[in-house]
Length: 103
Image (cartoon, rainbow, N blue to C red; front, side, top):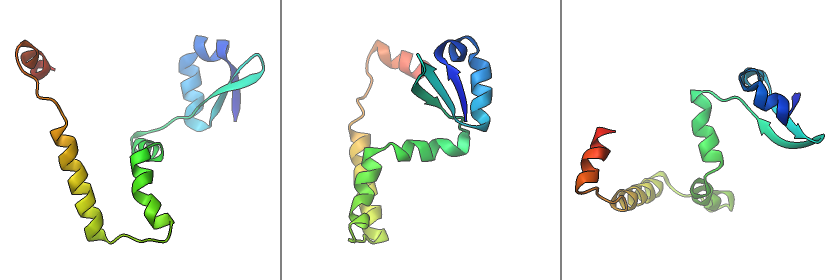
């Protein structure tokens, strides 16, 4: 584990990111840790997002309590939630529509 001050991490950010590829970099301010920088790649991003998702943990909580859920019931839950999310996306109309399509 490597340790850097805020000053070092900010002024040599590229070097900080290179160090984070190999190990966690602890950033300190006045000798106290304030942040940890960890390198990730494309394969890790999904795990990181799920790890921090309240919705994901809410879905697996029943299984952790000993109440298993069947695959068919899980598929229905996911399908219901997916339909609900798609409906909640506002449609873009008017001049902003062209700008949104251009992106």
